[in-house]
Every structure is written in structure tokens, then in C-alpha cells.
Length: 68
Image (cartoon, rainbow, N blue to C red; front, side, top):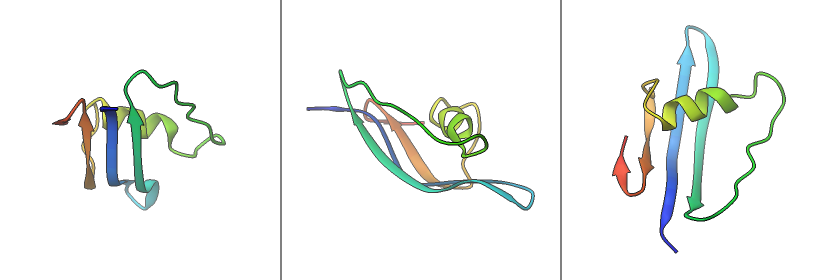
């Protein structure tokens, strides 16, 4: 099954605060994927990185096989 969203070693830091630390995941197409975590866990930041609204400090994101 093709991959809709894939991240590898995704990292984002705001000043001294590590928002996303080494996140790797692969979400297949036509899948329902739950993104759960406590407040401040980096869920919104990870989605903003995946959508290209923020630039990652390291790592990469692919949406449907294309780098964001």
C-alpha cells in the first residue's frame, strides 16, 4: 500500500525548547491515523512541519512521495 505521509528523524526546536525530537512515522493511504499526546507534546508542530507551514531543523517529510 502506498504511503500518504512519511517522516524521518523530524526535529524542530524553538530557542531552547525542543518541540519535536526525532519523529519517524509512515501513514499508509486510506488509513485512519490517531495522533495522540499530552498538551505540549508536539502534535500541532509536527502537523505544521508536514504541511510545510514550518521548516524542520533536521529530518524530512514526504506527502504522497514528494518532499515537503
